[in-house]
Image (cartoon, rainbow, N blue to C red; front, side, top):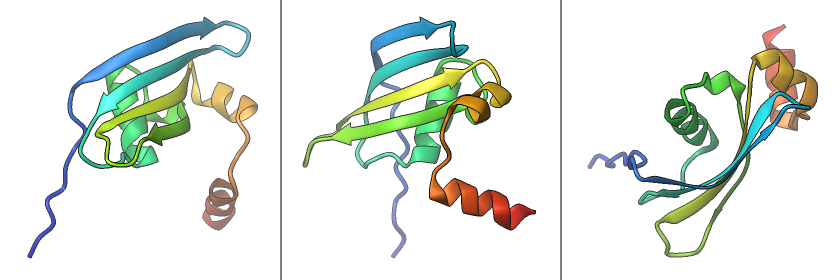
Length: 103
């Protein structure tokens, strides 16, 4: 038996979008309809595609959903470059270990 992999639907609703020139980023809150909770990497790729950006420049701050609901709210930042993102955003323990392992 194979599991069916559901992709996020193309239905996206922008709740808020604000440009923040101090940090060279767009601050977004979007609503996405999907059958399963999106993974952070999937959400980064989806938002990057929707806003014509590189997934490396997207930082997902939060993914919220209600139990049994197919609607998820994603809070994200889109930076103008990867360097800006790395200067400003704190790295998680997982990201730090991944970087140390790559050395």
